[in-house]
Length: 145
Image 1 (spheres, rainbow, N blue to C red):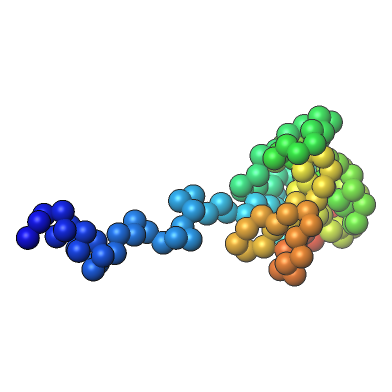
Image 2 (cartoon, rainbow, N blue to C red):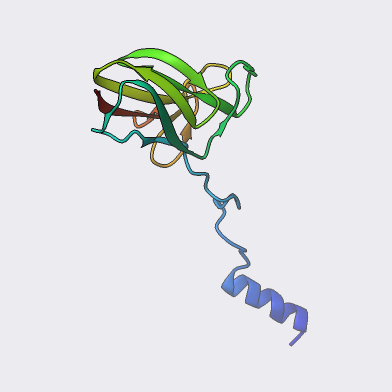
């Protein structure tokens, strides 16, 4: 039997696919996330200046004063009791807090001011209609004495 015909027969019999036709070859990209490192949820802290820290994964922070349309970078918007008090290009920042209970929120924003949204599997686009997409944010409650 002709060797070329033998090889073609084997290819036809077993297929010659090199992998799934839906495989893009790219590793999945984790969605961005943010969480409070310090203070922790339910903590009691001293009144005055408090050093606060967040942990941010899969997102690059930049100086919020340098808004750049379309750049895949951004900042953390920090709110105390629902009022934004700070835009930070760093994961550590200082908040001045009065005595009493407070809700601290940190949310990721792109450098152009658009809020970052994601779900458990992916980063969501600005016009995404997936109901599982939500702002990338973290909120904690603290008591200041």
